Image (cartoon, rainbow, N blue to C red; front, side):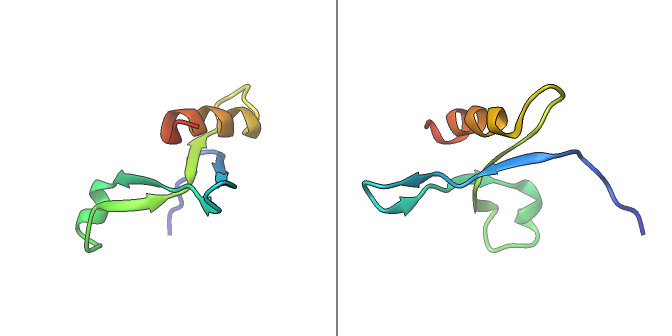
Length: 69
């Protein structure tokens, strides 16, 4: 059995207190096309941690990039 290690990631689950809702991002995942009813998936905001970045830095960056927050 082989395992692939892609590094560390930061995941963020934004919460909107005004609407009392969490914020999820809808993204297309081509690999899901063959295994799911739809290739469009709801996901939490996430990103890979690059060298020199903290998980908090990545969470902030991805919140802006993926959710416009």
